[in-house]
Image 1 (cartoon, rainbow, N blue to C red):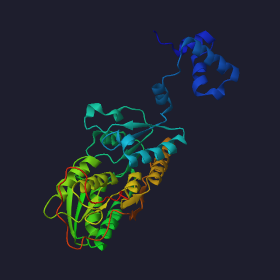
Image 2: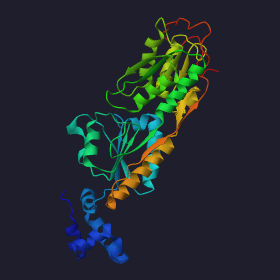
Image 3: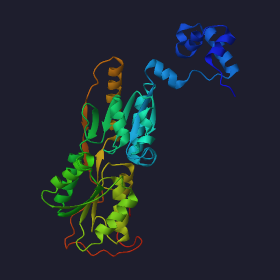
Image 4: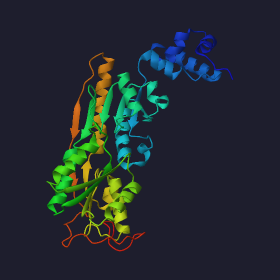
Length: 359
């Protein structure tokens, strides 16, 4: 079926092509009757309106903001913290009649959608330092806000006090008498000072010279990953009395592994998460709270100011925002075991002991 053109609509109505264009993009320039006549004729002919890409190019604005989300756009739908963050972004953008599109942080240059996609601005959320998509975004010099990762010169950023929050979590364990503490975290990238590095440093500072056995693995770690790493960690002859976790999701896996090994939480093992996601409350997990909604709102504010500056042909503002964190103490931490850690039971399924979710 041949696509109906704007010129055919103009010929059918008996007006110029520009008049038809105004009916879609500048309705205030036409009388109500003329506009309704044009739109009715277009509907009869099957004309869907001007091409969106062409209109964006002509106006110099697309009405779209791209979000480069960690290593996979799937995080926006399965991770509770990412879901809350994305909701705050969406609310802020919709108030300005802007839409949002997720970008894949693929490391394969040929598959990067950020290269040619029309966008007015970009939010980069915890993206890997070597992401090809991140490089493409920066090369395009679009208004950009970096979130939860190392600062980029000339680019606005919104981060949380990762180091301070981690320090508070470790200091809490130190005050309870724990000296043999482990941490489970994604592996930091060499030469890249992101929030992984900040949390590792904060944990070490908070222990005030106490031993920290950092267990790291590449990529975004799930609860399944946390459980697998914790089983190995807790089965050794000198197992830790406490575990600091990069996220509440990882901490959930540690709690599962502890139960499988017959370790009681917090009597035999203390566990601390990070984020204070809804999962943490359900598990009665001691954790570090970040205000994810406030973070999303700060990101939108910084991005809109940069986008407005670009439209006005002003230098883009480079704001550096750091939001506070707060230790939330619940039922998963307690004093160090008085007689040292008991030998794990090495059970294949949850048995014995008690988790923070048990009555």
